[in-house]
Image (cartoon, rainbow over all chains, first blue to last red; front, side, top):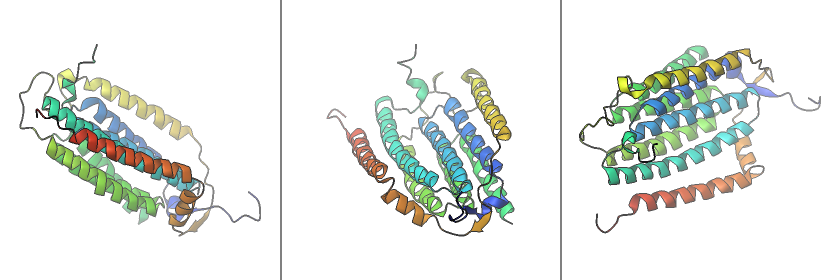
Length: 115
Length: 174
């Protein structure tokens, strides 16, 4: 770091709370999302689990960005949120179409491609 | 004081995430997801990202969750005949292979946890500040990341058109 540059600053709260807590929470949230995707059969709940995983990644990015005092990570989280909103809109439209065709949203019924 | 609030938000987030995982009612799962998203927004605030916390509440709670609840409403089915493939949504049933899910999840958690414990992260700065990040984020969105910003806008437009085309396509025989 050059001496003329202002010292890199991080938020005060981050100094009180160890980064490790953020890492463990986001890992736990991601793993809960994985269990949800692998075990539930309702397509909407699988969707919610995907949202949980996206949120855990966002949390991790924000924790690192404020830990390193680099707001680029927060811009990245902003884009992830936009993509997640698009994903939810298209995914729910697909789920509604599946419901119209099969009268159910159980993913166990969609086994035509299973070998 | 801050630590206590932080632990409360951790408890809210993880507890309601387990609620999403374990509840049988889809609507209750949506409400638990609401609590989880609020807890994550609180953790965003505690990490110093106030702008993203507000956008989290606006986008997720205001948009995504409303969409999901609409999905629950549109796909509500009155206990259709239970075949072997459509058991009720227990997590712990015999024929489900939940064991493999737990093994995969536990394996991923232990690998990530051991990597995180061994990693040595160094704090960059030492001086506290109370500056909002809205200014820097807005400036970066309009200068450095303007192309991804426009692409995200186009993506949202495409998703909007695609979703309405998919969900609204009604054949004449229906």
